[in-house]
Image 1 (cartoon, rainbow, N blue to C red):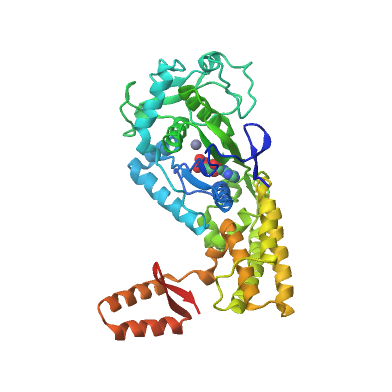
Image 2 (cartoon, helix red, strand yellow):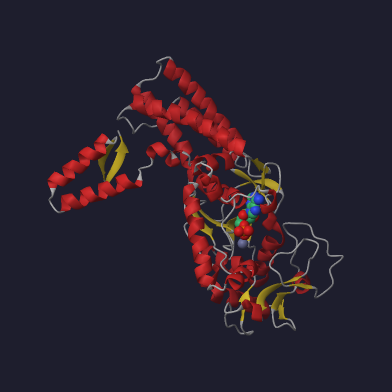
Length: 472
Ligand code: AMP
Ligand code: ZN
């Protein structure tokens, strides 16, 4: 069966068929964070969704090139930099580092490429130059460069591919300069914003004078530079459909004359305790707020992954408590299988494990129906527990069942975040110290460290990649 995804562009479920003639390589771009603040749990729903898409494509054998940008210059950032009187790079780098750490905490695989907008200014200027040459961009009296919707439509191009728009109200040449605006204000949007005193030191030279790029052009320039002028898959939260993604299409297709993206996937929003998150309602959580309440990245990942990506999800603290017990059921079953399998860790999946993989992929093939996929996992847990309790499983069968779970977990990404399999940092430091002692031929010290690790429940295992710690 083919993987089918809901394409916002066609508003239908479509078979996923990448542009690569060999059907292998997939270029995937997800709009990354605007690093004006610490990312909140709603933002992370979108990034965990992107991680799921990438992991499932890899599970299906595709070779994914996952790009996620860092928006490190836009209206909100400049406002904060001005208020705090700090340097742009100092301000954004701190939030970017925190964001990447949070992604790790949530078990998200790092995207293959993480371009920063400020490193692609010359590509943005070149792209705007192409739009000027093709006559779909113009310099306004405020010296900023705007995209002309009238000229673009006049070339037979469609503005409003992702969302139906009302052009009745639009007056030719109506302009918006802010990065975010409502659907009602269909208007020419800024590609290059001329320098104003409030921008402080945040500006670059361009053929049209000093200024800075608009937010929308950033993603067009970075995605096309890294993935080509036409690529497979573009993701983001549903709030980005208009204007951000519509403007990305217009800028890219307006410059190249080629289709920009084949599939657009949008994740629905997250509410907290039934309401839109807001600081004044006290339901606004960063990841760090939840960790401080004693929840783990793993529990949060599980909860964020429990509902279909196109459903609005109601995130609750009770839900997190429920995640804890759901994960404990999986962990207990997997631990028992490990115990029974003993050293036979190289099992290939057969029998019930094949069934698990089969049911899991059937569910995921249908537009990533993750709730049905979890259903398959919990049914497998129930059945495996029954067989374990009845003494029906041999060591080889346990190893095979484990192989099935591990295959599925490479998509869900829950196992690697298990505290059981995570080596505490002080023990990793001890392992490094032992390596240094061995190098220095201090065998007394290296043996003493080995014994200490053993006393704390860990053994050293030699692997082709060097020694690593394994739970006894
Ligand atoms: P931003 O940093 O504001 O550009 O947002 C980063 C990503 O988070 C974008 O893809 C947004 O669509 C997404 N996002 C923002 N708020 C929410 C929310 N409440 N639920 C899910 N995704 C969100
Ligand atoms: Zn974007």
